[in-house]
Length: 335
Image 1 (cartoon, rainbow, N blue to C red):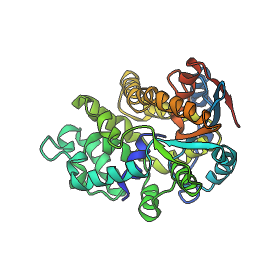
Image 2: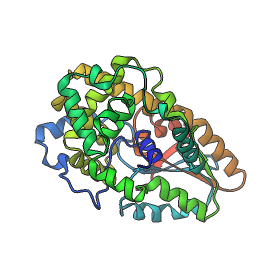
Image 3: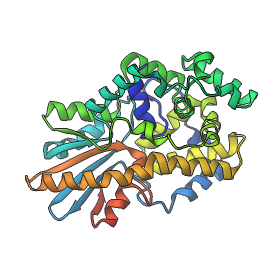
């Protein structure tokens, strides 16, 4: 398994599937009207809830942004074509993690397996209920990880794996799962455009370092419903992405957990807020400085910059678009 690709997955769009090869049911399309209405109500006032292609301008500075989907899909070619003019004008491409960061992550995992495995603490079957452990171990077996290995994995990594369907795992193992991020990097390298990472290679480890034991286990518990219908979940979210319905992806996960996990709404909301804060909000804020600095440097050369990162980083009051808007940038969609 290409672990760096899987880890980058959790840092961006929170679940996915390769729609061209993985078959499932779009759960949003088959959802009862009242349940879909709940999701619509939760997304209607969210800033920049829809859209994957955006442009931010401030004077002569310009940033073209694309919200990415981290797995293979032939529909990425349309997006790449639309980004060609921006790439031709770009002084740099900004991404979550570039080739240098991926290599550092791969090397670190090879040198220190304890980054993902807890060799000394209580095992997951000791920390979970018998019922939850049976569901979890079966789901991880389906993803090629034996129960004896799963029992020692760190909870954040297990929770991430549950969002990747068995079909998706097969594809990652066979072809590396080149998503839009990787395609953008390849395009930039072919055009001799520098690729700059927005954050250090070890970000994934620092994100979860201060979680309490209860928060760690609740992260798994809130993810268990996804495992039960991962192919359907993946197709649902990839279709929503290509329909530019980005914040629906986030709220779909929340309402699915309300209905199908054994956690209360308050517990689900707590986990969702924790995930949003760690995986999106705090990182979004840290990206504004390098993006705006890069845009200023590019403008001095008569150029602009392109940025590609997980689509869920775009919307919301603490999303990249709103943060730039608060900083005096003008935001417009490119759809």
